[in-house]
Image 1 (cartoon, one colour):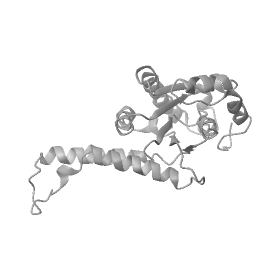
Image 2: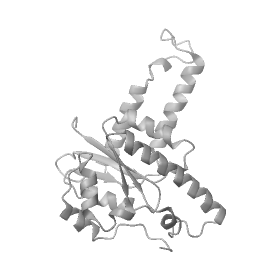
Image 3: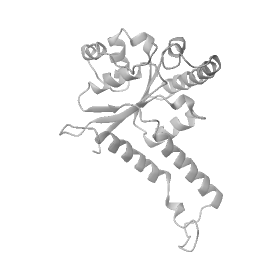
Image 4: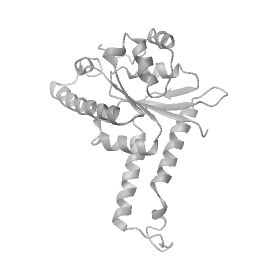
Length: 228
């Protein structure tokens, strides 16, 4: 599947990302999975750990089997990147049921804002997936924080979440402005406007007819919480 494309929905909880997931999956040959607990973060952390060890022991491709770090110089970024792309592909193919292979795969994730340095993670993802489409998604933070997912959090916890989400909004906006393969969508704009979704996605090379988007939007896409 050398022509396989990747797309990722990048956001925070209760922002409408499941609806976007449904819209993308309405496109023939597309298989965008739901959340996975930010599994890709562990591959990113593996890369950081490897970089740290290699820096501490220094470069030496002449190490022998008698050296405690024998072979570590050959554990390159390209090797980790290849494994990461393969992992994401295999993860998608595990639930792909059609005979023809998919043309585009990926997943959505909402846990980036809670990381210590989400910008660093996204920069690494862009290196690993240089041609991937990053679909960023935001929503009014008042509506996000008043949803059932966060309604029972303490006032202090909600204040901290607001800070995290505000910082991530800024990161998403920066990628939208500086990365030609990224797009930032606003749930408060597209929730009743199928044309907005269709036109926005077309700017990053994803063509979904407005009427198809509208059909998807008629169906409920959400996780059920006690609150809103």
